[in-house]
Length: 365
Image (cartoon, rainbow, N blue to C red; front, side, top):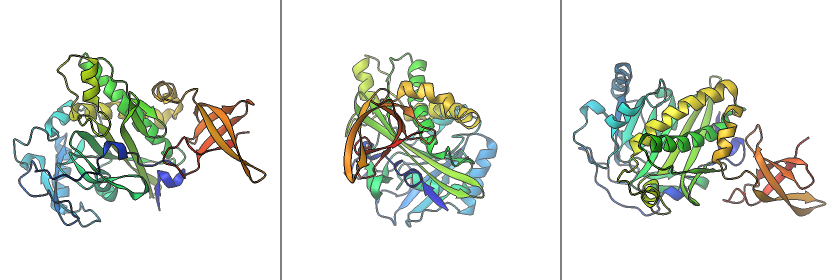
């Protein structure tokens, strides 16, 4: 049985679109075998690396087994990090730098990296059972990034593009995991700013799964799950504009406007900080529920006190009312209050790309 969050709740979806460009470009590779072709028959290099010796043994086993596959006929050329050509290109993801910065016990410790992939999300979701829980796949470029309504996008260089695996038992809270992921991204960026003495780059959360900076979208979250052996196998994907200012803006452009510093955000630093934050938040979430993170989440999202128009059917007529957003319900929808002091839960109608258009109200007892 397979569930995407877009199906299980009717509105959670992949929102990587704005960080991706529909312009298709050719790029050379940083590894010694060809993978620049963009058709489904091309070969994509995939480098495996673990933080510990045991995790590197897992990498060897995976390589030797030939178990990693993609369903679109893209060939994956598996290589161990210890075997990869060095030095690789300067703009390639720094595997060693990431591993040296990582301090988690579980998440991010097993890495799959490629200079070019169809989709990091496809790699982890289609090979979930072959990978350790907490494994992460990173690509420098995606040419079939997952989007809403089956849209396909190419992501340019400069994006932090990654997907990782986790398992959950309680299906009622699975849809809330995207909020934990979103919060971990924003807090990771703050953490990198703190460590480098930088002014805060205040990335905000637009419900349900967009990341905004100074009014412009800089990232998005995609979470999907399958149910197997009484567990929900969750694949979480993130895209973040780090050093590509088009089509909107990016972290480094905003940082240059804030400060005269020569420092630039690096994808490796943000990813390591993300997993450090996510591991802590995830433990709180599983043990104490999302309530343990709500205060911080509401400080980071854009919607407290926001007035929105909702639609209700009344005698076969659609009536519009204005309500004020208060927070989230236990199921992950928007909690709001009407001018009549009636609490309600807001559901998108599913017909608009903007989740705040066509909201439908359900009164709460």
